[in-house]
Amino acid sequence: MTLRQNAFTAATATVLIFALAPAASAAIDGDAVVEALAAQMKKQGLELTVDSTEVRDDDIVISNLMIAVPGGDDGFKIDKVLLEEVVETGTGSYVIGRVGLPSFSQRDDDWSVDFDGASIEGYYLAGPEETDPIAAVGIYRAMEVGPLEVAHNGNTVFKMDGITSTMSPYESGSTLEMEGEVKDFLIDFSQIPQQNVQATMAEVGFPQLQGRMSASGTWDTDTGDLTVEEKLILDDAAALNIDFAIGGYTPQLIAAMQEMQKNMEGQSEEAMGVAMLGLMQQLEIGHVTVELVDDSATNKLLDFAASKQGTNRAGVVAMAKGTLPIALAQLQNPQFAAKVTAAISEFLDKPGSLTLMASPPSPVPVAQIMGSAMSAPQSVIGILGIDITANE
Image 1 (cartoon, rainbow, N blue to C red):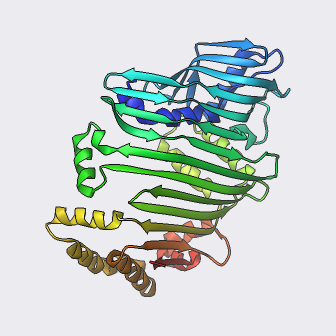
Image 2 (image 1 turned 135 degrees about the vertical axis):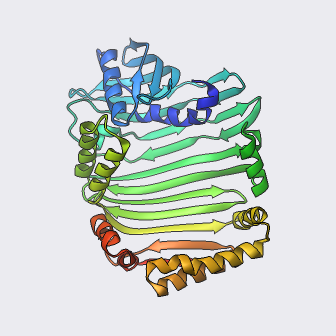
Image 3 (image 1 turned 90 degrees about the vertical axis):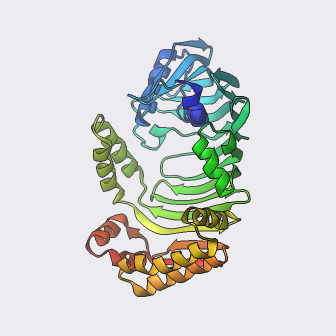
């Protein structure tokens, strides 16, 4: 696989290494650790192979670790992975004090990747006897991914300052607190080889995009209550804020999902999707808020649409205002349709913020939402307490 094909997956592959890294112990069996790692990665739909392992006291050095999607391309290779202070728990599981990935640079044709290394601390690698479905997918204390840069013909296409993630100590039935951050990143569309992408992004007014992401959440692993807050900021463009709470995300549900994936191995994605949808009916929706905060993107997109339609911004806005009531009439809820039309019209006239909220009086089972959507779609608005506001 060439760097042209995998340049943008380097960061993702790196993170996957950490979230699924192997282990060892006093008289550690390096091959057994790799087998445990391969089994855990298989649960994530990935395939792992290594050339060799070397045990040094309670450390393990893995050489030429390859990660691939079964039936996909050649995958992504990492020359060296170091597992430090590996301890076997006695149940075929391992606790790894630190997983280290050294910095590296790769060159292939016109592409290059420069990566500053990464580490994960306090990683638990589950063995075949692990019965806790949460522990089985990998628990860690902290992760840090260093700066990454992808270039084409010596010009930066993508650059990221790093990723950090922390998780509170886990015990069965405890509440986990999680935080994560994708530090400053830059995408330079003007350096992407695809001329159509360059031209489109330049015409929209964003030849480059830079920003950052952050997320935090709590998960009561006893009750299955999960709350998450996420924020994506694109400088001088827009910000997206997402806040949601769901219930029913229990260890039992996770175990059922793991069993379903194992039993349906080799079946079509469509069949797996239907099965997964059935399991998701056990969840409950507490609330969902999605807020878009404009910082020039809306008017730039309106101007771009206007240039394609041979009109101006005001013409596009007028067209949208005229089309909205017709499209929303299908909801069979005139009051809600009028509110949506008013909010979006206000936002288009003077872009500030647009907020969509679902705030039911009490958590609503997904099964109830799906049933209502099939029998009386218009009722879902009231069931979820959906509302929309602009510039508040």
